[in-house]
Image 1 (cartoon, chains in turn cyan, yellow):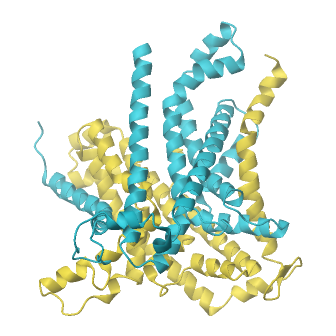
Image 2: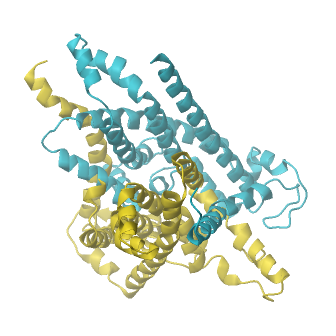
Image 3: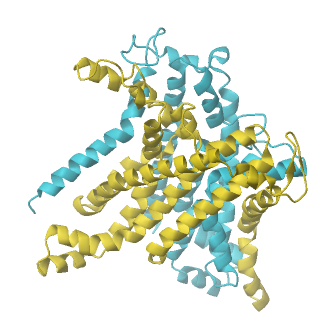
Length: 271
Length: 284
């Protein structure tokens, strides 16, 4: 084995500091949300209990948290369904050369690099001019799609780049129709990746703030509700809410990770 | 399969996605452009053609706000690059196995899956007047009074943004470092280059496109940013994004639109200059 250089140890130390920088603040709020009933916003911790985690669900104390949560779940699911459908279709379209593909491609990139406040303002202005009220499920949905769709599309392009078209040709040679080829050949092959893309899309939407903030209308999504709470909640309940939503996101990632592994293993088993 | 269908098929396939972008990206931005010329009388807007909104934003305040935004951008960019590059470099060149590289990279990405708002709040118990940092420094007797500049200040805004966005710098740099042919490094070493020379002559130039992509992300994210400025700046700091948000809040749409068009132009200018210096085509 190669002898480790001084650079290695310096970089390793730097990396560890970086991880501490990333996780440190979040660990502090996890700890602070586990305080006793008379806990405060800073250290030292006063007691140890699940009191504040429970407070999150008491409507009168913290503001309403359940309804925004449900809204965010519905919105995330809708965004996920539309994003997956549209990005799979579009990336399949891109496997063939066609006129105008460059324009479409740059429009996708533009959606990523236009400052998000412009998307929010633009959609808000359009709704204002048409005379429609903005709403989390109409204007909000559109705003989320401008963020999730380009990311999903770029990932799907990468997936189809590594994809061997001869499977599909074989299916067609054997007389399969387009839709049969898609459902029986393409779909099983891209399914594990779709799972990942879907989950990424869901979490992106579930946590999205900037693009939604100006176009959500009367009712808040969860990140907007949390943002509102930062100005009027001055108890560890706020940290508790942070802890709970983080646990929720983390378990989604874990579930997807294991589901992905399971799907891949089953496919390998079949082959 | 008929030939016409084969020619039309890609268009049919891209239609849903294109519709979404046209409806929620292209049309809204065109609309911002149009509305920025509309008349505004303090509470409602009417279709017209006036340059008043643009004149309205050409003030000292706007100029200072832009300067402040550039200051944030410069500091966040430098910090994300100086922290992000060594991290990406360590992962790509010093972690031996691919599984470990992926695992450690994942460790770096997990915090970015949680709400930005939560990640910002989590700085409060650390940086506040009675926060952990101040308590520690006072405890060891380094300072007598709590340091006020830690929270609700420009420092806090920059720190918050670095914490939120650094992955957008790390990921593209890591990606381009991973693509570097390892034999090039060996060749340079065989020809007698020192470690520093290998880095300067081989690795750095080859990872430049990754730096460019990361920088573009940082520019886009920081230029329109208003949440971090609001939460971490505590009303003390200003940025263009926050200015626009305030104007929208008071329903001054034409003014906000004019501001947004200027913001878009400035952002695009920066991105185009980055692309002129560094070529990213190889990465795409």
